[in-house]
Every structure is written in structure tokens, then in C-alpha cells.
Amino acid sequence: MIWLRHPRLPGKRSNSIPPQLRALLRLAPKTARLIMPEGQEEDVPLEQIRVGHRLRVRPGERVPVDGMVQEGTTAVDESMITGESIPVEKTVGVRVTGGTINGTGGVVMVAERVGRDTMLARIVQMVSEAQRSRAPIQRLADVTAAYFVPLVVTAALITAVAWAIWGPEPKLAYALVNAVAVLIIACPCALGLATPMSIMVGTGRGATVGVLVKKAEALEVFGKVNTLVIDKTGTLTEGKPKLLSVLAVPTWSEVDLLRFAASLERSSEHPLASAVVAGAEGRGIACVPVEQFRSVTGKGVTGMVAGRRVAIGTAAFMRNEVRVSGQSLTQLDDEVASLRREGQTILFVAIDEQAAGVLGVADPIKASTRDAVQALKAEGIHVVMVTGDHRDTADAVARQLGIEEVMAEVLPDQKGQIVARLKSQGRVVAMAGDGVNDAPALALADVGIAMGTGTDTAIESAGMTLVKGDLRGLLRARRLSQATMRNIRQNLLFAFLYNVIGVPIAAGVLYPVWGILLSPMIASAAMTFSSVSVISNALRLRHVEL
Image 1: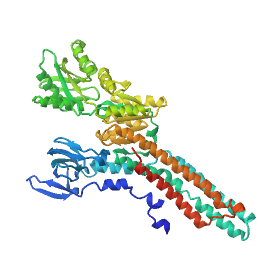
Image 2: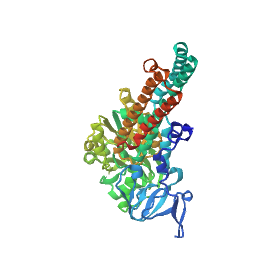
Image 3: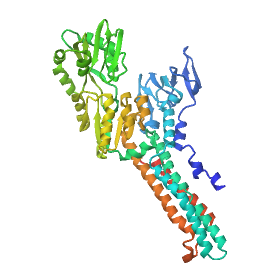
Image 4: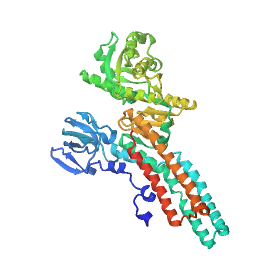
């Protein structure tokens, strides 16, 4: 009866929804204010919202779904997904996340992700999956339990035989009571709960500070990581590059060069392509149709623009695949070297197999990146930056961040090879990235960490996700990993010591000296207390400082 009715006992507790997830589920509003095509507004159930719907979010309301601000300006409290209490300014064109709290400004937004596709729904799903997954340390508890049961049964039999032979009258009664007491007090519940309870509470705690743990193994291993391989674009940088320089050879004007380049890049999904297109639009340059568009991952793009064959990409791409003469590229060397020293990424532009100029694109470094990198180094983690950028550009970024080891001009398929090589050297490697090209390396690393601002492919391949892509989340994740593993070890130690002490007492070792025996009822209470103690210790993780 006690077991069935008490809400905090193991059988109840391990199947309940943790308070962190219950709180997240309550964040989504029940209704949203839909703006009809005719202009009327109506409150409708959240389930009826579809992608493309225009929604009004009034001051103090929760944002109903993920989307983009179309009208107005406000500040949004995103502490539910980032752990940061300072509201974030939202203007036209900036994305908002469902479940966050709108400030004093009213805005009109366009729904982009609804239902199970919203960030909030994905957070709940990923945390739930992590809580159902098993950490490698759980195998220790499983192996122990496999030997534990036959050992306890043997101990009970020995207890019964000993009391039946040497015990006082009535011998059989003493033998039966003490054998039953041994079986009851040695219930392996505490051992079985030690790991999953800590994992469940730890992953829930991580979700409240913007660290989503998808695999329990990642939570266990990350505290041991000594090498971090980190992608540059979108991870160290904002992933929103801007076109800064346009340099054309004398036979072409900068306007024509940018028109050809932007027209071609409009068909590409690469962040650098978006920067070129945005740069052209900002200068009032209109794009023209493109034919025969072809993209070579990590190298460049080609296509027909206004009857001319245009190519954009790296110098190697120009030489090896576009067949641009080395002499026409050489004339740009001085300008290219200067731009690279400034940290700009260089895109060579060729028209009809002749170098026409270069575009200089720079991706601003995230404001928190330098502090995060220095803090990781202080924790003893060796940081390695990998990028497909030219060596000079990569070195310029690395100098700003204080990163000593840089691997530049790396193709997408080589990132996995770098991770594999580092692991073969005996290092515990984590990989942080945000793009589709990072997915193989994320899956291969001991711990893969995706940016929540990155692609779905990267998020699916990783064991952890930083919701807002803030690298300070790596420090929170590391502290969470260490705190969770420390908690698990405490639980296992307590469960072990409890059985080591409890079983001999239940068997009656204190009876010859002090005449103390343990009744089955007291043994049952002690067994329950051991499980409750393990649960209570695991719940302390809800308040761990990250």
C-alpha cells in the first residue's frame, strides 16, 4: 500500500514527467491571434495555425509558434530556452521562438514552424529521448545487478541454514524471518535507479539553460572531453556574412561583376551566397535569370548568366575545374592577400573562363565567442578550428580568438577524417558545428554538439544541441556533465554501501553480541528509504549551478 500510494517512491517517480518538462509543456499558449486575409483578427486554437499564417502578438503575451517578425519592434524574454534573463530585441526580419514572452511592444509575425516542428516541441522531444536513453555507466549497474540477485539468494539460504543449525528455539521461525529480511532489504531498486534518475533530472536541468541532451552517452562523456574541434562559419561566427569588398579587373565594372555574381549565387543556399545577393540588393543591382546552375560542395558554383559562363569559388576551383588561367588569377594576388589579412573570405569570380574579379565577404565573430574559447582553454580543453576558408582568413580569425591550432582549406569530407585522427591519438574529442557538411564529423566524434541555429541534419547527427548557438553553453554542458556523473557515482556508492551494511545486519550478525535482529517490516522500510534517498540525491541536480 505504501509503495502504490506514495508519489515519490521509485515505481511512481521513474515514470513521471520531470518538473522541467512539465514547465516547458505549459509554455505554449492555447490560442493565437490570427490575422485573416481580409484584415479581421480572431483568437483561434493553436492547432489551427499553419505555416504562412500572419499572427499578432500583443504585449505580455507568449509567442504562439516559431516565425519571423513582419511588423513592429519589441523585446522578447527568451530565458526559457537560453537561460539568459536579459530580453532580446526583435525587429522586422528577426526570428522569434514559440513559448517565449513578448515584452512591451506589439508585433505581427509570420508562422514558419508549427506543431511538432517548433523549437519548444523539439526541445521536449529531445529531452524525452535522452531520458529514455542509457548512459554507458548504466552497464556497471546492470552487471552488478546480474550478479547481485543470485548472491542475495545465496546469502538468504546461508542465513536460513545457519539459523536453523545454530539459532535459538524456535530455530525454523528465526531461520525463516531472517532469510526473508535478507531478501527484502537487499532489493536492487536503489542500484537500478541510481543512473536513470540522475540522467532524467540532469537532462531536464540542461533544457532550462539552453543545453539539449539527445543522448545520455553524450552527457556522460562530455565531462571527460579534452579536445574540441569547432567549425568556424555559424559556430564561432554569426553565420550571417556580409559583402564588404568588390574588386573587378579593368575589363569589368564592379556593378557588372556583382550583377553576374549575385544572379548566380541566388540559386545557392550557402551563407556566403546569401551575403553576395544581399550585397547586390543593397546596392540596387537587379539579378538576371540563370541557366545550367551547378554546385560543387565546398568549392564553388557555375552557371550561364546572360549568355556568359560564370563561376564563383575558391582559387583551386577556378584552376582545376573552371580552367581559368593562372596568369589571370595572379594579377589579383596583392588585393586578395590584403583582404585575407583583414579576415575576409575571398570568392573568385570568373566570366568565360577568365578571372573577372574577387568578392570579399566577412562573417562577424559572435560577441560571446572569445570569452567562451578562453574559458574552455582554462578548463584544459584543446581547441582546434577547422574551416574551408583560406589559411590567411582562418589565421586572422584564430588570432582574434586566441586559438593556436587551425586547419584551413578543409573540404567537408575531411572534417570526419580530422576527428578520427584525433581520436586515434587517444584524445576524447567533441565536435561543434552547424551545417550539413558538419554532420559526418558530429556523428563520428565522441560527443557531437550542434548549434540550434544550424541545420536539422546537424542537429539530428549530434548528441547535444545548444539552442541559441552560444558557445558559453559548452561550459554549461561541461558543468552539467560533471555534476551528473558525480551524482550518479554518489548514488551507486550509497546503494552499494547500503547493501554491504544492510544485508549482514538483516542476516543477524549483531545478534550474538547485542541481541539485535531486523524484522522484515523494518527491512522493508529500510529498502524503501534507500530508493527514496537515491531519488532525493538525484533531484538535487535541479538546483546545480551552471
